Image 1 (spheres, each protein chain N blue to C red):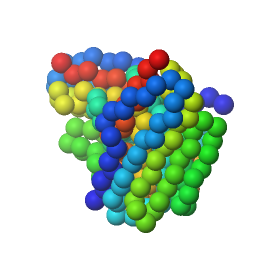
Image 2 (cartoon, one colour; image 1 turned 180 degrees about the horizontal axis):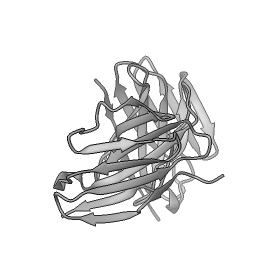
Image 3 (cartoon, rainbow over the protein chains, first blue to last red; image 1 turned 90 degrees about the vertical axis):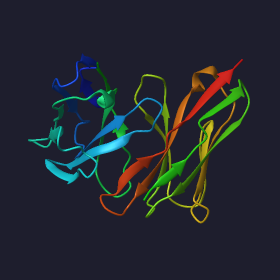
Image 4 (cartoon, one colour; image 1 turned 60 degrees about the vertical axis):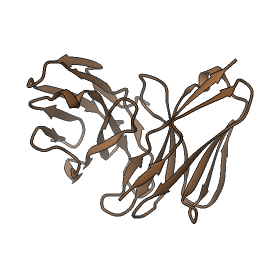
Length: 114
Length: 111
C-alpha cells in the first residue's frame, strides 16, 4: 500500500514570496491533516479536512496560509506571503476517519525562508 | 488547554532498556499515541493506548495511567537504529478530536 506522498521535499524562498505544497493521502483515507513542525518541536496541527470539508482550522494563520482539498483526495497548502518564522517542516498526514484512528504521515516538505 | 511534557534528551547503551516518560494535562482524553521520528524523516506510528495498562509490541511497550495523566514508552534490547526522537501525542475529544504533540524526546543509543 502506497503511503502519503508530498512534494516538493525541499523548498527555499525569500521572505514575502509565495509557496505551495502538495499532498496525496493514502487511498481511501477520508481525513487529511496539515502540520507545521518547527525544529526541535513536535508537530502542530494547522488544518484538518474530512473529505473536502474543513473540520478544524483554528490554528491556521489565515492572513497568510490557505489550504484546499477540492475533490476530497489530494490537498494543497499555500503560504502567501512567507515570513522568516514560517521556516519549518510541513507534514501531511491522513487517516481512515473515526474516533480512534491512527494518523499516517508523509515525508514532509522542509521550507527555508531567507 | 493542552500541556504535554517529555524529557528533551536521553542517552542509553546498546542492548539496554530505556523508559521515556510523558505526562499530560488536556481538556479531554481519547487516547495516547507514541510516534518515532528519525532525523529528517516523518513520524511513524509505534503504539496507541486508550485504556489503562501495558500494551506490548515486540521490543516496544507502552503504558498508560489515565488517573495520573501519565504514559511511558519502554524500549528493550536497544539497537543503534533506535536513535531517534520519540513523540507523545494525546487525542483530545473536545473540538475536532485532534492530536496534540509533545516536543519529543531525542534518544541517543551509544555502543
